[in-house]
Amino acid sequence: MKKTLAWMLAILMTLSLCGCGLHENRKDPFVRAYETVRDQATKVIEDTKERVEEELWEEEDEEWVPDEDGITYEAYNLYIWGREDDTVETEEYRLELEEICLDGYGSLIATLTLENKTGHDLVFTINYSSLNGYLCEDYLFEELEAGDSITTSVWFNYGTPFDQPLDSLSELTFQLEVYDPAEYDYQNTCDIAIYPVGTGPEAVVPLERYTTEQEATVADTDDFRFILLEGSKDDWNDYSLLTYVENKTDRDITLTWDEVTMNGEPSEAFFYCIIPAGKQGYKTIWFYEGDYPGGEDIEEISFRLYAFDTDSWYDDAWFNDTCSYFPGA
Image 1 (cartoon, rainbow, N blue to C red):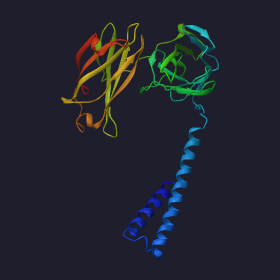
Image 2: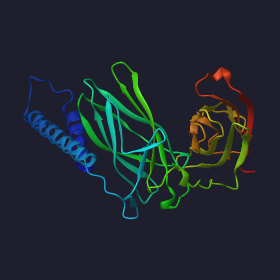
Image 3: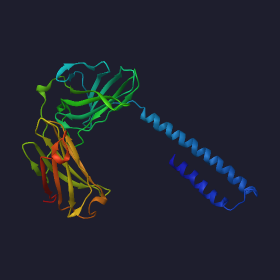
Image 4: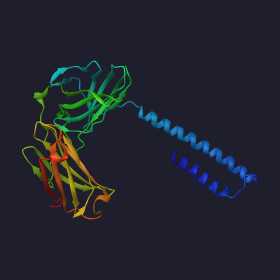
């Protein structure tokens, strides 16, 4: 398919060059042939483009099938605001857990039915998700018209470089947010916990933290812990820094940095992380090739680290200190 498009474009370019300088009123046979081929090539390209778009659309609509090495849980419990229940239902909306399973790559997939019970549009999103207390990656953004419902799957993944036993992921928690997109006014937030193996909060086993020989604890207070685990370059010469963050408090906190340097050179690498109360997790910070002295070994990363309550402001940081990390040490 790509070859067809390339050939058609090449023909158009060649003939367009040949046709340059010919007057419209003096169309010889060559000009007429050029216009015929041009029109035919344009039609082929448009038809090919439509077929490609249709194939991509069909691929997006394909039903997801669990990995052979995964697990489909037969028994599970759903907790809303700390109490056991089957569905989340209010006067405005309904959420029902249809199925939960684990694929062979360590991702937990929850199949949810969402229903808008109002007379206007509603948006459903999730935030602050965690697996066994560890922050994880997620994505849900569904906008439903009045009276509509949908069944959709949401992937929850650690985003970390290590594997966990398939049967160890015994708790999934997240915050559901539902709001009217026309007013940007939140209708409802709800804390949800799902226990895939049919147990409850009392049976959750903490996971072991990933450790490396390169790691360095740059901040460890009564409120939080920040560890730089390891750094590495990829094939595009971008540098990534894997970090471990932990919130030891009963309130949400935010970590961020500035005044970042690598080998003494300023860097624009961005880091901003919200950690819910009592949670921990792994965050990767990216230094793109233009953000550091590319081609050199990274010997030192320095920065000013800030920590503050999420419901306050950057200026109210209760931790503000300069930190350094030596990857090769």
